[in-house]
Every structure is written in C-alpha cells, then in structure tokens.
Image (tube, rainbow, N blue to C red; front, side):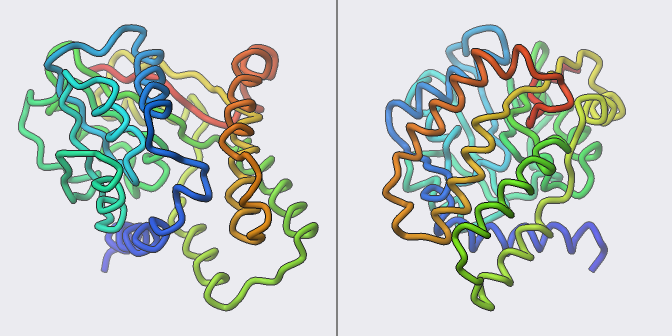
Length: 276
C-alpha cells in the first residue's frame, strides 16, 4: 500500500472499532436537544439560517450527530451522511440519519454543482491529504455554497489534553490490557494532523477557496470531553457522572469567557467557513 492508502485503512479499522463506544465516551445522545444544537452550530458558523431545499453533505458523519441532528431539526434540508467506516454508518442509521453513503472523504462521488454545503466536524485531521480533499469537494459546491469546518484540533489541545490525560491515568491507576493498548496506539495513528488557524487557511487557499473565514475557539469543553473519553473508558463508576451536563457547562464557559479572553494560541479548535 501507499502511505496514503495505509492512513485511510488505519482510520477505517480504528473507526469500525471505536463506533461501539464513541457516543458513550463523548456523552453524545441523539435526541431533540442535540438536533437543535447541531443546527445552531452550523448556522452560527454560516451566519445565516439553513434554507429549504438545500443539500448538505456531512463528510465523516461518524455516528450521526450532525447528519441525524439536521435531519430532525431542519427537515426541509437534505442531509447526506458520508463515512469511510461501515460501523459508524450503522450507528448513524440507528440514530436516524439518512441517506447515507460509504466513501473515502478524499474521493467523494459528488456531481459538479450538486451540493450547497459540505460540513465536516472533526474530520480533516484524519485525512492524509487535506488540501487534495478540500480541492475535490469544491467543484461539487453550487454558487454561494461552502465548506463548514467544525472543530478541528489545534496544537494547543494536544499539549493541554496530554497533560490532562497523564494526570487522569495516574489518578485512575488501571493499567491497559494488551487489547486496550493496541487500540490506544491505533487512535494515535488515526489522528494525522493538528492545525493552527493559519495552517488550515493556507491549505484551503491552496485548494482554491478564495473566501476563508476561520477562527479558533474552545478550551474548557474540549478538556471536559477529553476527561469524559478517558474516564469512562477506564472506570465504569465514572460513567454515572452527568457528562453531558459537564460538557454543556464547558461550552457555555467557553462562549462567555475563554473564547473572549484566551489568546488564540491557547484555544483548542479551528472552526469557520470556506467559500470558493
């Protein structure tokens, strides 16, 4: 295999495994509340409402937080979920997403001018060639369309999250089984990139996007999400904590404080919209 094909295959294998516990570890529920949150998140980045009849492609839809959420909260919009992992697509289908398509995000079978929006939530960092993938989506966009980038990791989240993970593992004091150790290594191999705002903007510019609006956001919520993922995987007792409420409180703190006062280099995600 080529390095590109190897990276794609690692991601497929890892996400076929991770789908079994993804929603639990990230405190995801597919209900009316999450559906409203999904729509609000996309519309806040677009700075407009989703429109009746629009076609949205959720690339790397995973278990369907966006794809199923938009189907519930924006029924006049067609939301197509796409993922490389058959396991993730099965979870998305069970969550209410549809239509669904199994495909490599870097090689989407989309006709020219057939899509209003491509939405990707925490997906670009899994792709071997980010610029090539973004370039391949651009011809599918209709006039006035764009790519909505939601929550791509920055170098800061690696630094801060690494400190938190090491502290949690010391506190929990449970060694990994050989199988768990294997999947931890697979998870690291599946995460191929982190991005500064300028690095992702440069990739988008090289892919032919002329209007690039990106910003950094998030601090408390991402740390809470990391804690949820690690703690629930190591301690059944900690699964009883109200993780969804904790993540919601973190998101509110970010909006009210962290996104306003922390320097850009401390924030944990890159978000925004790319337009041709």
